[in-house]
View 1 (tube, rainbow, N blue to C red):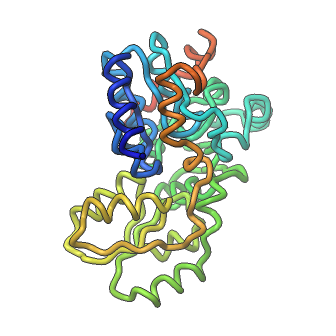
View 2 (view 1 turned 60 degrees about the horizontal axis):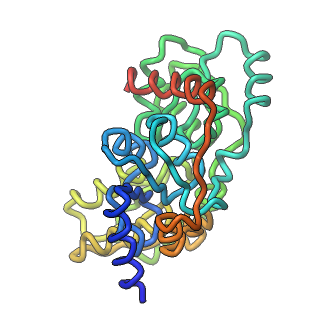
Length: 303
């Protein structure tokens, strides 16, 4: 049944010259029909370089918006319209505009996990892999980092020479993991190396052997000589690594790290997009695309 749906998707994808993007947190059955898999910004760049006029994002809304910002001439679908990101929805343009007025002289750094509209009032975007490097390069010692206070705290520790103000936002899935969860996982797997995403709370990050983005975690695990790993990010990554490195063992840090929004997209959603009966076309005004693109271009320039 699953294979039949996958074969139908692959045939329609070719017929309609569509590009399928799958974030790394997607299920294996979707990864298998995707043209590209990776982190959100990485996927947006790949889409901008491809010739396909139609792009289907298997991920969450802000990711599809970023694809549209970088490829305004393409028709971009969000495979499942209800797939949002709680962190991206925590702060809006009006709130941050008011905060900016109260903090004159601060450079506003926005995590890529923000809406297109919010990006229009920010100075530079960052990804979890580029945040430290870019903040170091910014020609200003006063930084307002949003929305993720946990990633922001990690950046502040790596760049102590700068004054970094944080707002109370973040990923509720990663933030749910506790120090006790780490202690339990380490006791169960004493020989395993702990790899953690910086969206986790500082107490968890401090206990990690390696801290990095989703792609960074995967790359580290693949290249490491170690044979056992505790994976401190969305549970799909543990599954994908086990497929790709069958000679190694991978363990969940916690069953809490399951993103329901990433799991909302199904093969049927992708099929419906290709058949013209589902998905949502991402529509952004020219003004939003132009202004949001500025902080992304600044990230590319600095990164």
